[in-house]
Image 1 (tube, rainbow, N blue to C red):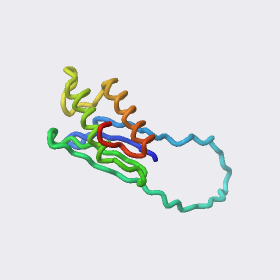
Image 2: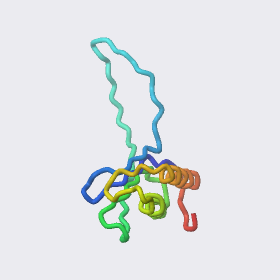
Image 3: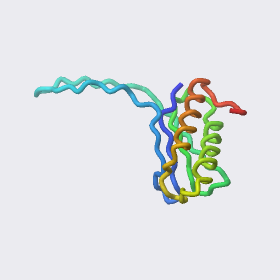
Length: 126
């Protein structure tokens, strides 16, 4: 399963953190001459967007964009909240509503996403 992105939005609606977990392979650049022969194909791919807001932090929203088949998104949102409170809020150099620039937050978020993707779910006790 795939988790595409994680976003953290402050109560004013500003993006304070963004992590793109899944980056598609870059295709080689192609040049075309005029007139172009284009064939449009319709792909029915869906993305699940999950919003999380915890009672302890009013206004902060955690957004996870994932494959619809990915299970355990609610548990993953709880884990992201835990990581945020442990490594951003407890950081004496972090100010609320400001962008999150903490290496430990990044490392722990990446490891939580890896665990969630490998397991296909993010169970209790992780």
